[in-house]
Image (cartoon, rainbow, N blue to C red):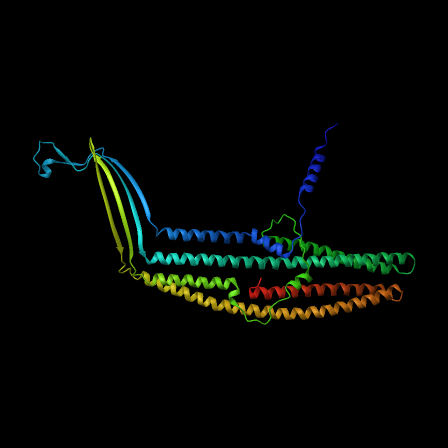
Length: 437
């Protein structure tokens, strides 16, 4: 049997590889959000910050725990320092020199240090715990930000998907009408002008459909980026606007704003606590630092014969700042200014959240009214189309009227879909503004 051509082998290998790939399952909105929570780089960076905060607490705690160190030293004098005996007032033969150091020395020591009291150490422990709480709140803020980005990127994909389904349905209906009109034209009961008008309308609708398909590809890539999803991989959405509208139907339009429901607000408050810790640190520069130590050492020293010389010492050291040139005062004032800045930011954030909630609620009411109006318009357009189609099939209506009625139905359907999308985004905006999932 002759060998298979290389191109055929490559084609077969590609076919088997494609069959081995798992089919891409459509993803609902919650699926996309959960994927982002597990894979988005911002989430991973926030997780690393929490781990770093844990180790920072351990590092600060360890600085106040017992510190044990050991050392070993050996030295050998190639030339021992010495002075003539007569220079020191000793009576000795001429040329005699008196050494001040033994030639060999081997020493070792072990030291135990313990911090007994330090206000800076106590403040650092408190600050590190606050910092961990701060980065944990930052994780909540990051998760909320990622969630909102995914929602904002998912809804346009959903809108275009629904629009494409709508256009596909209208294209199929128009294709059937064109086929029927061609048959009537061949039978001599319709003009060629009627066929041409329907062909033009169908071509326009197909062109619009192709344009939407390209737009869908662009917004789908934006959704992948918001999720941290590989851009080269396929992604399909499975939700529909009506079920999502029902899922977000409980938008709160009356309750007062709870600022603590917004993680960025609670994170700002924790930042205020960190500023207060700095104020406490620099407000007590006179606090002493007390430490204790115990050290044991021994050495072998000598020239031709080594002698063991042991020693040990224990003590306490107290450091008491007296005057630092005004450095502590400057740091204290800067810490107070930082705390005041956080207070100003708090007021600004409260105003911004209140404004966001108010605007989202008004947007929700406006969108609800638009949906009701577009539903009425669609019903009217469908009735006009049904009456026009009946007249056309009875031979008492023109194709121009039919095409115009069909275009009005398509426009009304798209307007209703856009209004429903606006209502959905408004409901989502209310929940986001209130800090609700």
